[in-house]
Structures are given as C-alpha cells and as structure tokens.
Amino acid sequence: MLHWYRKFNSGVYMAEQRLYHTVANKILELIDAGAFPPGSRLPGERDLAEKFGVSRVAVREAEISLQAQGRLEIKVGSGAYVLDGSEYLSHNLPKVGPFELTEARALFEAESAALAAPIIKDEAIAELERLIKVMTGEEPSDMTAEEADEAFHLTIAEATNNAAIIFVIGSMWKMRKEAVQLQTVYRSVCSKDSSHRSDEHNDILVALKNRDSSAARSAMRSHFTRMIEALLIASEEEAYQEVKKRTSESRSRFLLTTQLD
Image (cartoon, rainbow, N blue to C red; front, side):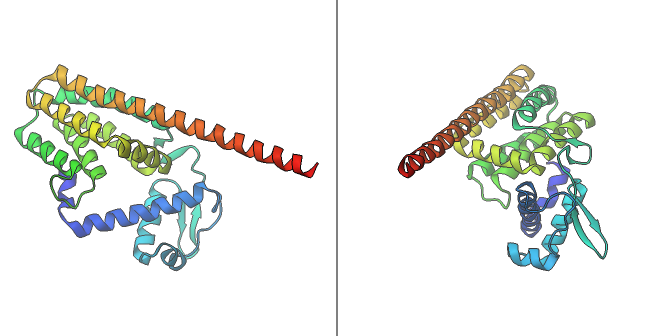
C-alpha cells in the first residue's frame, strides 16, 4: 500500500481533507469567475465560513492550501489577497488543459505500468484489487471513487521503485486535483462512462498479475486513449451547445427587432 495513503485509514481525517479541498475549490471558482480579481482581498474567515457553511478552521486550511498553490498571499494581520494565477496552477506546476495532461499521463503511465509489471509485489496487486472494488462500490470505504482511482495509479507508480517516475506521476495528479477546470472536465467524463473505466482498470490489473509488461503498457494506453476520445466528444458537445446558444440569442434579437418594426 502507498505509504502516503496509510493516513487515509482514518475516516475523520479524510472527511476533513475533503472539506478544505472543497472550500478551496469554491474559492477558486469565485476567483476564476471574476468575483475576486488579482490584487483584491478575500472576505474574512468568519464571512467565508458562514458563506460556505463550514468552520473557520476549514477556511483557514483552504487559504493555506491556495497560498501553497500560488493563488493567494496571506498577509498576517491584513488578510488573504488574490494573486494572478494565469501562468501557474501552483509552485513549479504549469497550467495545462485536459488534453495536454491526458496525453502526458498516457505516455508516462503506460511506461510506468510496463516497468512495474515484472517486479510488482503481491501486496501491491492485492491493494490494486481492493481499490478497484472501492471504485465500483463493491467494498465500503471512506475513500471516494476518485481517491481510489488516484491511489490505483500511484500504487503502480510506486511499484516501479523509481523515485523520478513516482514524482512525475504524482505531480500530474496534483495538476489534475488543483485546477478547478480540469476537475470539472474529468468528473464529467468519468461519470458518463464509469463501466468502461472499471473494465479498463481490471485489464491493467490482469496484465500486472501476469507480470506482462507489453500487456500492461497496452492496457494502460488503451485506458487513456478512450479517455482522450471521451474528452473530444465532450469538447465537441460543448462547442455545439455554445453555437446553439448563440443561434438562439441571435434569433431572439431578430424577432424582437421585427416586433419593434
């Protein structure tokens, strides 16, 4: 099991973790929507706590997290100020789109699976089996399906025994989790094809069980290829809806002008 996931055995800890992440995401959504432009000061902890229905501690932890990401600057005795987050998600992490990130993950994680296959330990295999059950809801857990998904991929990375690979794949997951736009896109895509995702994770597991590097690489690559296709479909649908909206607005303006004449 991943050593950094051992602490997730505490349901209380996980609930607290999810809470401040949720608050951080809500603050980012307001910032990205223009409610708090760069240079402006956020409302006080008490006001934000009341707004989000959480404790001041959760707000404080969320602000500390956003400061670590380079989105806020906390000035003692003054408050939290919004920084320009257009260039970076967080310190040393570039701002990327869902296609860029998925392509990068496909390259690194396919080779990670291939490298891990011949040397992965039975304990790691057992953990991967458990995580798939958590993802599909077969096994009760305090972890969410998304957290189990992350743990699944990081378990494979750790099985390579390569610190550089573990760092790179961990950083890509960090990018995915810390960008509101990426979270929204991935959540939308994953919720629509959860059955495919389950089958794909099982294919990866079978290849790793067989200690077959080629099959593990192929299964992981297929997983991300399907995800990229799903992102393309979602992007096309979004573009279609935008065109439809603009056409509707133009039609409404035309009809209004006609009535005025």
